[in-house]
Image (cartoon, rainbow over all chains, first blue to last red):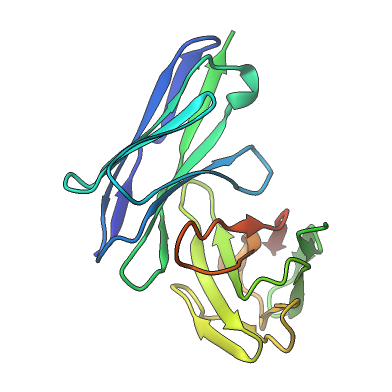
Length: 109
Length: 114
């Protein structure tokens, strides 16, 4: 079956760096997405990786290793507003999005 | 631009009632989707559409129906509501599934079936 694994919850300190991991097993691969979802709100797009390597976008970076079925989202200079759930999703061979359950990130002052 | 608009935002239904969740987008996107999100679970695809007049089942279609008569609108119909349909429903759209395929979501509809 198809599966995406992420930690359920992580805690980090304001100003620090946190890495949220995502491992996937899917039938084919056509890209990996990270979305941010604040409590009670809709998900919003953060990043997209289709080739191996690191994509940097401001304080957020996303890394992909297709051979390992692995990605991470790196958040630097954490701010209180970064408290949210982070959803990993993979597009399979049929271009269907498979979603992880999300990682709830708690930022402490 | 309004983006993706969903109504209603909240609704309480009694078991056996029916209702329609409305979704409209003004971005001229071909692809539209209905997801449900339960606590601690990933988004589950209910139905999707690749264009006006074309719809297809997703992972969890039972108990739901959709139609796509125009590019803009993609309503989700719940027939004979059951407690298992208590969830948060998100409508989403994108221009195409390939390439970046960034999804744009509506604000969500929180449905409770009692």
